[in-house]
Length: 326
Ligand SMILES: COc1ccc(NC(=O)[C@H](C)Nc2nc3c(cnn3-c3ccccc3C)c(=O)[nH]2)cc1
Ligand SMILES: [Zn+2]
Image 1 (spheres, helix red, strand yellow):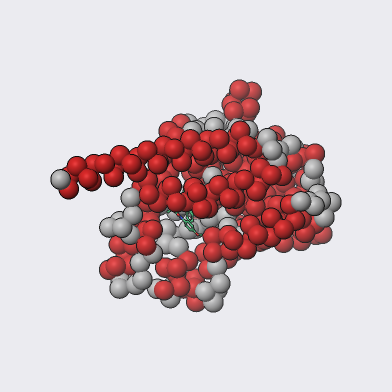
Image 2 (cartoon, rainbow, N blue to C red):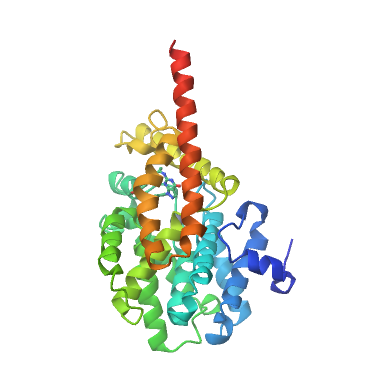
């Protein structure tokens, strides 16, 4: 089902800018066109003289390098990119930072999990995989995602930056590396503390401040499923747990350490999610909403609803367990 950019209605173009967008209603071929629309509607095509056939080739190469695994697949890439796109419009970021930084943010989201194998860094390091060896246990996955992105960009026919100046290309490469490496959750607290420290005196003209904000925004986009409507978000948690359980099954088979919140014998869907929302999601989203108050209604209110939903589910499970025990 080929849908050219022309056929995307004005209504869909507006819907695409909101965090309520439902990725499950669209086929991969249509999603490819929606990604194209994002580059077009942010004026990147004209600003950076990106030829449409090069953008299509880039997105096709990206599509091919995402793997068919339960969570870290091409649909996840689209969700993260679409949330980033929505945040750019909701916060009116185009009036605060320049197009090169916006191009870095969107392209980083597109590329941020390229060739993810469904096994996280702890597994890569414990199993001493080729990636752990190559990157000396330092964010092996995120280094790989970034390296694959630039393998694609090295090829002239898929290099969307080929008409930029060397100076611009250098700046974009530095920015994409910074953003993709920032998605390593082991750096979560460091990056969040860095952002908290500058929040009260945040200055959009300060490059260091902009760099931290760009890292926060890709982090927020990356783990933002619960900011979406429940019927969009809940299937994502099922996919995530499927991938996590695949990994912990493999770890048990290989006699490797098993991450507790990935162990199907230890974790329940609601209990893992209430903890994640309270201790990871809320603190991160609240800091970003401190800088952009309009995000309170768009991403924090939905997460409150999700916390209530999973807390209720947790209690129901608890009651059921009590009844069974009697
Ligand atoms: C600080 O490092 C962490 C902290 C928490 C987690 N994950 C969790 O607590 C659990 C499994 N839940 C969870 N984890 C999630 C979500 C979205 N992305 N995401 C995720 C996926 C892969 C790697 C890391 C994370 C946070 C989500 O909605 N829930 C994973 C890593
Ligand atoms: Zn991701």
